[in-house]
Image 1: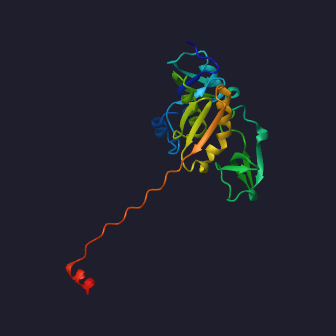
Image 2: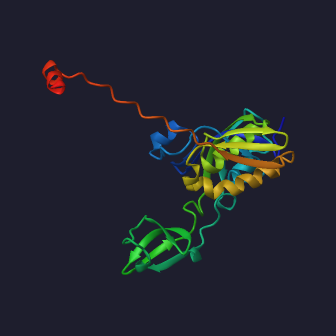
Image 3: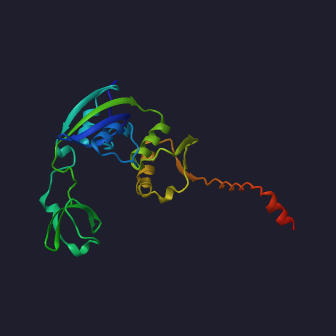
Amino acid sequence: MALKEGDFVRLRYTGRVGENIFDTTDEEIAKEEGIYNPQAEYGPVTVRLGSHHVIVGLEDELIGKEVGAEGEVDVPPEKAFGAHEEEQVRSVPATQFREKPKRGTRVEVEGREGIVVDVIGRRAVVDFNHPLAGKTLHYSYAILEKVDDPVEQIAGLIKLFSGRTDIKISIADGVAELALPPAIMYDRRWLVWRGTLIREIFEYNPEIENVVMKETFPRPAKPEAAPEVPGTEEETKEAEE
């Protein structure tokens, strides 16, 4: 059966610009290409078609395909990260940075992230376009399966937004409960995307009336007592005296 907007699918993909891979769900490919991130969760991702969980050009390619389909697609800038706009390249005083700016350095200026593309005297030229703006992307993909279970769908959204796979999920009587691991509140990515996650849970699951996030802190284990080391015969006599 052909896939349509609203379907959740588990997807494997690799994205290239020319010969260079910039994104992949395959850990081995990431290591081979030198883009491996030890903090990332690799493996197939779960996305909802029509929700722009992947770039528009790739999403358009997937809609209408069937589970098991594999293929490749070229995605033009207008269906990827847009055109490269010259007005998004600005000259910024070097005094705005904590450290001396260098070419290729990613910086933040007035809440916007950009890349230093040149340094002229005491000013840095910063490109605020997306690094892939203006580029045609090439994707290879495989649609592994359709995901119908709401628990698996939510787990997929959590991984997609936060990269986490250690949150247990249960749904009962209109309540979706998420069992959060200790110290998750120190995870910046989780905090940034938590609101989006909740909104999408409600949007895609009309039967859910409440989302409960529960943290559990287990009692710390007591330290084991150090074993007694018996003294020598002379030490024992001295202690008795």
